[in-house]
Length: 313
Image (tube, rainbow, N blue to C red; front, side, top):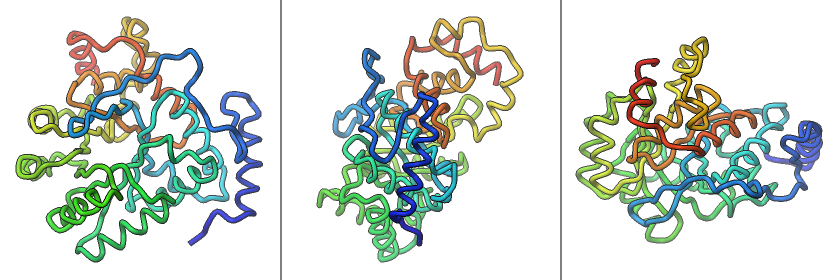
């Protein structure tokens, strides 16, 4: 499997310098660690119920965007994505062995810039059998270049009863900080609800969007009642939502809540639900990451504004 060799590192640094020449995202292999923008208010954060640790409300998903060739232009843009997240005060980055090269890419980029202390890494176990799960998680530690992962999740509940004791052991040993489960389909909600009610968990990651609101009827209330933090994936409904909304003008009140795009309104809609702890839109584009992170600012949506957005969707 390809590693970040000296040749690739030099090419990476050169490409970063070229892409940063425009001034918006000045990054390179030797650039300073990005800090939150001076004078900007911190990104709002919500508490993880099991620990009371504050977590910034908008993070980054690595599906597709980080599964890229290390010799390509898409890879060279990714440091700017991390810079945009960190400059806005975000920290959560979610990955999975299911996402091709994403874990390796993330580990390389964090190591080059020495950014590991600044980020909250979430990844997953996605296999069957105890031994296979342990091997896969050990691979994640290696690929992410860390000896501690903040959140380990059982991806799509695959063999969850086998993996959960292993995750609890890793948490007790200090190798992971939080334990969770994930899914992306409402077809799994009955099983997810049963799991949430039967065993203590720190996190639930679930699909939730303006046009995909089934989770708010049962799962989100159960998670809130059980003290489980919720990470929202697929916040744009898999992409179809924004394509449908794009031809329509923004509501007249959008600027009053600090929104300049439908993507920001879609994220604000999700964050208007107090059961949501963090939302992780995926992107490999620095501009989109900055736009997504900016959705955390400004006033919360009112119930009337939320109803209007539902009507648009």
